[in-house]
Length: 248
Image (cartoon, rainbow, N blue to C red; front, side):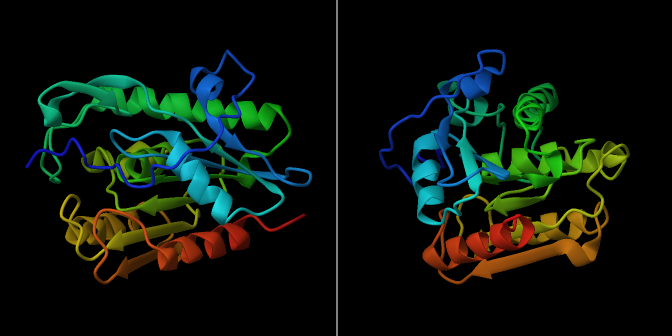
């Protein structure tokens, strides 16, 4: 099945409040939802294949906390093997959507470094790493998991929606220098997802339990939900962010 429409959920318009740091390429164009009071925490949320940061910035605005900054970068446009080499926004190349599909190892690692550069930028601007949370939907959720699990800095947590763990065979060794062995992870998945079946989400949750503290992993599924999000899921995300990034 062609997946060119794979992630076109959450397309809404939101004015781009562009980042001001040209040394971090993804920040130059990222959509940022600023806090309404002093920002003491940040959520970096990554969209899915073929999408942009705009829709998820809109979604984050609906569940925003006043002391949290939400950063929704746009993926670069690259040819995607899964979609007949069509050029579209993609964090890394995708060859297939099954756990045994070949993977773009170099592209995944490069993308993770680009996300870590955003984390470093926030730290330099006064938000400590343990007040930064990563999140994402589908391919973006996959990248947020991989980035956090290979990050030496201790992060606040990960929100992983409708996704999988890239390069899963390289773990737990790939996390040997990670500062996130005790990191809370909220993983959510639609039970009727035709793109990334819920079984892949369940397999990911089991794999995560051998990489991080299993008591810190929450895996929630939503009956009838396909490859998108729903209000109940977003309520769970808001609750998770509130718990891990309380006002200080």
